[in-house]
Length: 193
Image (cartoon, rainbow, N blue to C red):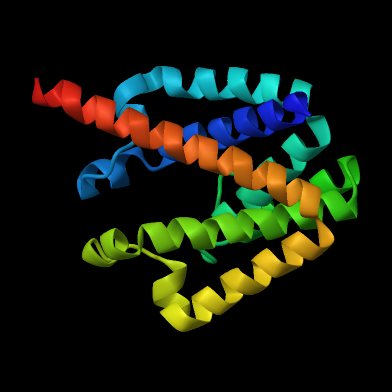
């Protein structure tokens, strides 16, 4: 039980670190908190070590959550061509299909559903800030009411079909969000001194 939760926490932290590594310049320009500014270049090796430990503790869910995050992260820009020569969404789809092969369809689909729900939650939290900086946001693209309905539908589907996984996932997300908020406050207080 604790092993499963700790694995999800570590994989979630690794995903956050890699995301902050990729978004460092955009976040700096928009004045948003980013762990890269605290960790510097060490953010990448830390994310790999943390991801490795997360996979050791929870292999199937770790792979499927990472692949779902990768797919959704790549789906934002339909026309972006990556070094592989593939469009971003194509590469994301290949990673997701490989993840499904390594784990199973149920695991991959549940991870995709939960990561999509997390994206909606994150975009709801950042809605006002993203509007200020003209950042892409699902709530802006789909409309506030439609986005809330989709969020509720995703939550209901997750609770009905994946109740235990949903509880672990939400617990891990809450713990990660609280940790990041504490880090933001601590970092802000250190800069004020």
